[in-house]
Image (cartoon, rainbow, N blue to C red; front, side, top):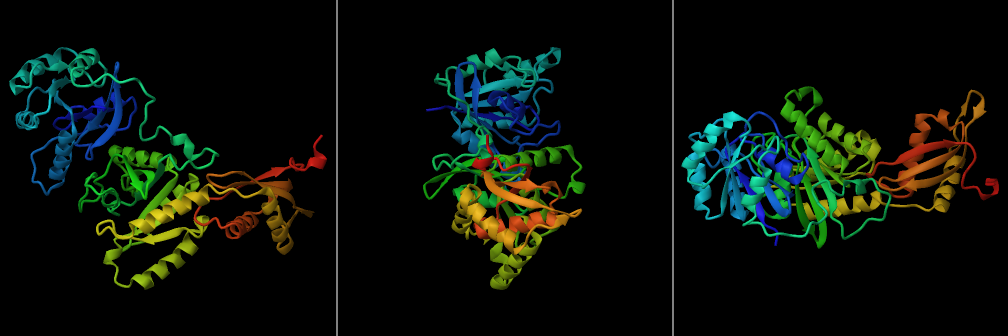
Length: 462
């Protein structure tokens, strides 16, 4: 069984920098200010010949249990309970602070093996802090530099008694199989479906994920913008594997000024890019704000299929009337994903989750759909007869042939003459008819034009 190592310490001692070094990727956000990490993040780590699971945690602080800092501390205490060994990290340059001793007592009371890691120990400035750290009573400190990788062999030696040797396996992380989101292949029911949940701040994304998986895995609360890192969680729905990605709330670009928020949004955008289905979560009490429409458009441009979740539905009085109104709005405002599924739900009450997942898997099937060339061209013949393309500069545009080039999302190639002059309105006409005729609701559709002879016409090939 793989050992679990939790990185614990007060804010800004370098825990996330160490986490990124151990997993070999910049998965955790890192910034100079304290308190960047809030949720606990897990990853597969390697150090020399050792393989283990590592947990990055929020900085320990003394705080009321109901405050944001108090809820962050509760997440860290959960990580301590799950760990087989604890890396207790201090900042050797600053030396011991009044916060270090009570937290050292906390990890000691856990009864778990503790390795004292004196980070930022490079150069002479760290020597005093290393000597001071003996006062914590956690044994000999391991001098280390997470930023520069100094002291790696000493850390390896300290971990060896607690982490069993395991054969090296191919590394897996939140983005390891990301290219499959664009691959033109059959969907594999044994691979986890990657579902990214996005939305404005305080739409209830983390609350929904917690309710789905049945535990308080993610930090939640009334404060907007609690989530900063994109956190992945493995789950199963009706026996089917799912990897859920909870993301930071995304505000209008003009309001994003701080470097940290820019990093959070970049992380969320990456989660969209590597998703297969994106759930855009709306607050039912203030739905279809301009930013909601922007997020749907962003997802469509990335080629991901969309499901809209109407969260906080338990707060709506006229449910039937509002649902009809919002479906009508979506029809007009979201033409690029016409027919997108809209699911009322309540993450807090746990209502509508089954309906949401049914919609997710149905949308995924549509996103993977392939249509035979014969069916497409029978349809095309009827569409061209009903509404032929217009003439351009006295020359009629001639459409000869269409085929599906790939799925994920459904992508079609149109062959003919003068197609570079095809009006956008006519392209839209073709896409809308494709969507309706072949039942492709809610998914992006790509239509590329090709000039010259039809390469699929056997009589024309040499």
